[in-house]
Amino acid sequence: MVFMKVESDTIYHLADLSNFSISEKEAESLKKDLSEILKYVSQLDKIDVEGIEPTYQVFEMENVWRDDEILEQEALREDLLSLTKETKDNQIKVPKVL
Amino acid sequence: MKTANKIVSAVRLVQDALDKAHEFSDYNIFTFINDEVALKKAREIDAKIARGEKVGRLAGVPYALKDNFLSPDGETTASAKILTGFSSPVTATAVAKLEAEGAIMIGRTNLDAFAHGSSTENSYFGPTLNAFDRTRVAGGSSGGSAVAVALNIVEFATGTDTGGSIRQPASFNGVYGFKPTYGCISRYGVVAMASSTDCVGFFTKSSEDMNLLMEIANGKDSKDLTTLDNYYNDVESKEIRKIGIVKDFDNDSVAPEIRKALSDKCELLKSKGYEIVELEMPALKYALAAYYIIVPAEVASNLSRYDGVRYGFRSDNSADLDGLYANTRDEGFMPENKRRIMIGNFVLSSGFYDAYFLKAAKVRTLIIKEYEQAFKQCDFLLTPVSPNPAFKLGEKVNDPVAMYLEDMMSVSLNLAGVPGLAIPAGETDKGLPIGLQLVGPRRSDKALITFSKELENE
Picture 1 (cartoon, rainbow over the protein chains, first blue to last red):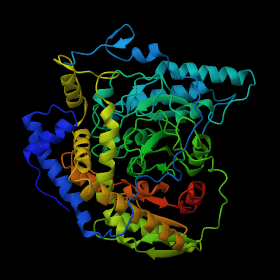
Picture 2: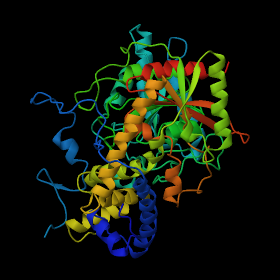
Picture 3: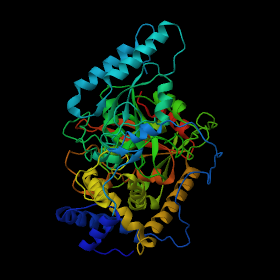
Picture 4: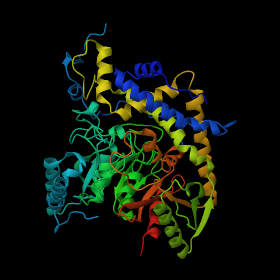
């Protein structure tokens, strides 16, 4: 496995991918924690998986379909819009995008 | 369990439970207590009983709901700041099924935020205290639910188990905790953590109660296409003769008192004529490493939806939309949530995917095969739930790897999708509960629960 020490720029890159605006102090403690976690999981190096197929899910079926029909909804549009902070003309209001 | 009837009213059962919930408030079990609505529902059931109408199998039974199940009663926060203020307009299928039988939710229980943790210390609302020793953790992530049952506040509680989150707190608090076969109970309306391992299950004081709840809650749900058909009652029971012990778990990393409890139960089974077989399952020791790659990857994906726009907490004073996302997520998640999301994004990122995620997915295959082999040699397995009994508050909360190691014996079941029942198995010298888990092949849920009677002390 390719375990290497986690550097600060990796932490900021991961924070960016994860959409976190982390502080310098937080970055330091994340660097330590993530290094330890990755070091621990890197023990998979020791196990041989040559020729083994990966498993991504353990449900016994694949591609379960339902009929394409409109079902009764539990929540109305007003119920859902009432969960947000600010709405205007039945739309959710957020700070400027650009 | 006690249900309401003409002599003992639902109001009485519910009022008793509410009184106890308030009495034990210093244990920090509940994120919400459902005082008014619970009593209103109890009065409705009493009125039905008075009119001689048919009532459900859980009529007037007070229960506690882990705070990651959606329902309109109270806010559903998953014990995370980012979901504070969120009152769900929809009801989880599991909740709807329980309430259709007359069960009454008296409170929502504390958990590690988004069920990320093994101690309930990662909650935005602070830790829940262990029912047997207030200086120790409740276990987690369903710590509040386990303690609510252990302190006799409620008859049962719901939980979710992604890697041990029902079984481990059950064993830390001396109650039954069941993680069914993957797909047995609908997850519609349950806050998602890792979709390929998440399971809904229960905490109870007896195996009979567990069976009743499973009969009610299992089955296909058109709102969750990862539910299996209604197999729970229909699987033919077969004679149980051989119980397997995993030799790889019988080593110094497991507390001596837990190993003793296991050997005591083996002696009990032998005295009843069962055969004990020792098995080697060498891939299981890699289950934890595989789990802490696969699950964070799924967590990173499932938790990307929390952005402060549509519901829950939103950070103030963001200059633009990107800032709103980043500030809301930074302020709204607990440190363990962030670790898991970032690890997930790391193992999925280009350059590391093959070495981490793909490798872990292949190890998962080996673990599944190992269980299949094991169940050719025995009917069920009996193992510890965790290497130690409840640890001290604060002992591991700042050391993520030490905390993860507590999940060593529980996560492989979730990777394989097989059921596991945590059962009480005595106490340590210090009076802390010890739990063991019975593990069976897929769809052996009912047989597993029934068989656990054999492990009860006379």
